[in-house]
Amino acid sequence: DHETLNKMQKVYKRGAELEWIFWDNAYRQRDWPEGLSE
Image (cartoon, rainbow, N blue to C red):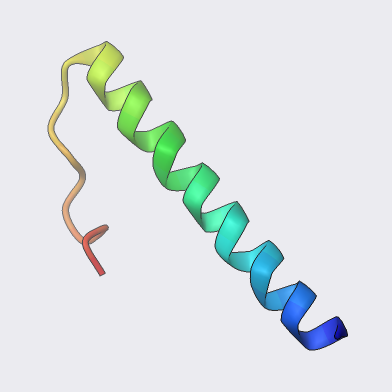
């Protein structure tokens, strides 16, 4: 249904953002940002 699709898209987008942060920080040799472990 539409509500489930919206939830799935939101989770996918957040996962992509976190993956970008992970690889960008690895490339720049930085630590994981504070407050993202929620």
